[in-house]
Length: 279
Length: 317
Ligand SMILES: Nc1ncnc2c1ncn2[C@@H]1O[C@H](COP(=O)(O)OP(=O)(O)OP(=O)(O)O)[C@@H](O)[C@H]1O
Ligand SMILES: [Mg+2]
Image (cartoon, rainbow over all chains, first blue to last red; front, side, top):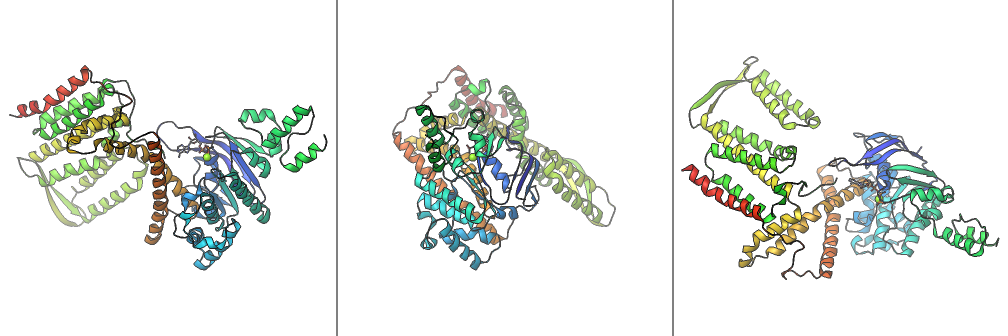
């Protein structure tokens, strides 16, 4: 079993009566094979939710179980963080070592690998994120934004987490960079059957990559299911304040333009083509 | 963690409406007064006056008590110091305290107990006092293997002087809390700028200084937020900020500080660009969004504050 939430509540400590950031959230995530997108309005509690998944936040009430470890005050939490890797928004700000290699080795060393093993890991993951070995000796601060982000992600991958959690990983990148980062996660998912969980505001990402989607609204988990079931239901989308993916929009204009009745819940170009053939 | 700097509490009171310049100058004068006053009764009079001010500010008393609580240990040691070392005046009270093995044991237990439960206690100061009182009380017993006898004697001057100092500290804390609780940070900054104006004559860049102060105040919460994010990001990479050997601690601090420096410089750069884009130029005269005007109350408050020091001096003669 991977991650299990049961009736989790969380409130940020603060002056006065702040609202709950998570209310009665229950969910369960498999350790392998899932590609989950978490969506929702800004301030709905997405980042708060995923920070519970590797014990960076501890619930006020309710139970969280991560690979058999209970997330509770006083428990040892670092083992959880090795198995559930977390990549924050703008992860490039976590870089601090003199060389890319040292920075990638930082996580594995913290989790008890030897220097030699960590160095090997660095060599492996730098290629996985699409950079070559010459980057290893460079300073992380002379890289472009996209390269820095790849290095930061490599630093997490080097810890070999079983589940990878990402908070808006593509924000601030150019479209090309966005696509190649997303394809990187997809290949990790396909090649190693890793469970990927990512927060996104981009519905195209959801429809193109995710096989499960979770919707947060005002601190509550309001939808947990297949993308088809979400995007196929206009009423649901409206009540969650969500948009539909671009391809679906195109399909709908085609339908209204040609007065056709093609299925508009399409997620990739193949779907579009096979629908268009019916015209 | 969301921290509010300046702790301004909006309310509808005459102190809130005072001109920040008048308020700031009056505060400085009142503080100066506490250092001019030489006798206990005048000082207590000023404390009563301060309490009336606090009451009329319509700010809950608990906010002031919070400010005072952070200083209780200073107050406590002021009192202890006077009691132990000020031997002038007439003898008020004298007793023998017996340090015995049994008492020593009790004191150790009390200290350990205090440290164990203090985290769960809200009014920690009262608890602290109670613990100290218990320790002293336990010293009056003389059973269980005498080690040493102490003579404790308290003189009138010690009591007088301790009360004098405690009253002064209470006044200072309440007055400065009053200022920051009733004045918006921006107003405070404008007030500061005006008060510093005379220094411009000797070429002190007062406007830049107050701009720097206000920017610093504005960015403290932001930087704390960023620090929090970095701490979480590094925790995700296996840093356990709660423990570690000295060597690990150093690495942890580096892993926090270097990203913080980089973020700060980036922010500073962005801010400088944004300010330049809006034609900010250091040293050039700038107009204000709100021009403060002295009203009758402001003049009245200032006159009163200015008159306070001479009258206190006269009172002492
Ligand atoms: N450090 C914090 N201290 C206090 N409140 C916070 C903190 N972080 C978030 N919140 C509050 O908790 C709620 C949920 O925030 P969260 O960051 O989880 O939202 P989100 O869904 O990730 O939003 P976004 O899409 O903008 O990233 C918000 O109302 C926010 O104001
Ligand atoms: Mg977020």
